[in-house]
Image (cartoon, rainbow, N blue to C red; front, side, top):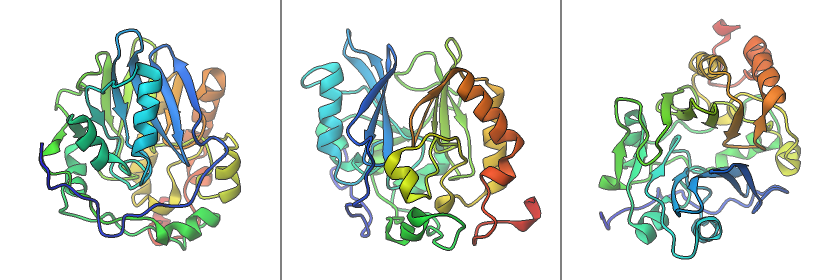
Amino acid sequence: MDKDINYGSDYKFIPATSIGSGIYIQVLPDLFCHTVQIVNISLVGNPETNEFVLVDAGMPNSANEIIGAAENYFGVNSRPKAIILTHGHFDHVGAIVELIKHWEIPVYAHELELPFLTGQMSYPEPDPTVEGGMVAKMSPLFPNEPINIGKNVEKLPSDGSVPSMPGFRWIHTPGHTPGHISLFRDRDKALIAGDAFVTVKQDSLYKVLTQKQEINGPPRYFTTDWNASKESVMKLAALQPEVAVTGHGLPMSGELLSESLEKLVRDFDKIAIPDFGKYVDKNIH
């Protein structure tokens, strides 16, 4: 394991939370969603065999909570086979350094995310001017400098398979970030969407706090390519998922999910794309 791994110099605890923080939902027999402050991690595996994978790595300073959640579901001293990252934003890699050191396991991400995970490139700065609520206004506080986990991160297999997650395939869903991925299992149409779309209006502080469920596009203040985001949502909707765990908000399933995704695709420009902001291309309207 590479010992010289670190966060960006702007990494810090973010004092934001929701009523769902610390709560877990067993979405399927082998799919758990656990909320860390305002973001979700997923644990995928069979509790009877104690073999599982962690999807995303929570908020800064959340390693102990994530380790505790893993041991709660899969047994004391349990260790995931791998960590799969949907993307590298601070709220999805907030505990990654501590988790790598504790578990000594590989991390996988899309090759287009690797520069942001190996200290080479910063994400574009969040846009506090974007049309939205208080969370958007707070976004300059959010870390965006690259972390460096060095050789501990590997690019996902080019054949679409997901290491240690048989039955799942990864799907490139860019827009929110260049290498954003979602995970899909065809046999039961289970979707782990990351931030390709979410089920809470993430730029609204009130709705984040209360976790009011409503389908939305990716968080506005961090999304830089709205054309790609729209195409990604269309790609995921075409899969007709039966259940979806998203990076923010409550899991959604059944008719509510299908109708909500259909509406998001139909009205994406109105629902998801802000009317103004520095990453908004007016030509897409």
